[in-house]
Image (cartoon, rainbow, N blue to C red; front, side, top):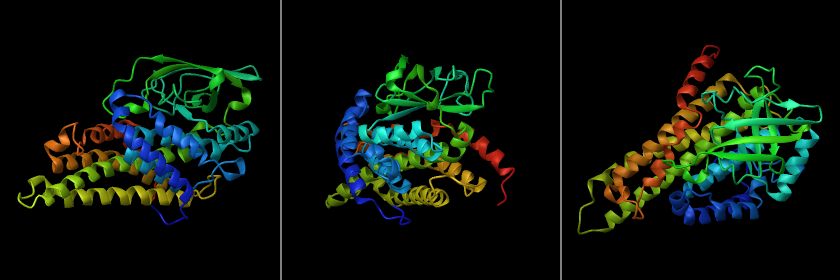
Length: 388
């Protein structure tokens, strides 16, 4: 945990309570591919869903670094719970940092605080090849209200969310990259599920595709253009919060390997099995990941200390955060694999306390979330203008 700001102990105590519940349900959440409702109930009871909302709007005013730490702790207990919480707070941060004083969005954040609303995100879409900076769906307006229809390839926890923040073209004649964010309120939105959610890992995020239709007041379009929102806030927060979830997964795998090694060491009549000798290398991998994840979060927090993200967000910082995503998404499964090498068959089995299966499967999703090849291409473009 960074020492740049004081920890919010009351908030983190609430997160610890939710993490304990999440850990107890994690195997069942994974097995049944069900939403981690128990942990979310605790998070709501502790007002943790509004933690990232500024205090002036009734929220917790919790720092970015404490929210990141929460993602880590929840991810360490249950990857799906950590990821749901991370995705929700990305949407909260996006609205809070780019509402430009719009009364509708200020009122919404106040309502979120009082009702502990859960926000999902619909940035993916059929026909755009995974590029969140392009949309086919377009906003249609009559000056009073806006309507929108979108075929989203995934909406994580969409069926459980109260509201959805949706990307779309600004108008029917706008270019695919001329996008806005629309706040689709649950009461005015229908979601028709497209297919199932039978996947390898992150099963509890419940992220099938949906056909989304909404009609909301015209002031439910976020004032800031999506290109600016994505570059300065949504994507950086995604890289930071997601990487903390992945660090939590990797730490969970390390914890199980360490428990196994200690159990082997306690059997004085038997020599330790060969895999235990890999613990120092596993520890070094985890330390390296911890250092990169937390130092990158510190850098972004320092650069964006003012909630109005200013000129301190540089090409160099964008490169660093993109690189964070690449490295963290590759380190997490590698650490899980090394933990499996330590535990051997005990970690390979699903019916032991040393099992690494869930952690490894969950970690493998990391490279797919904003695909790494797309990020490498983005970095290649950024390096053309970056001065080292």
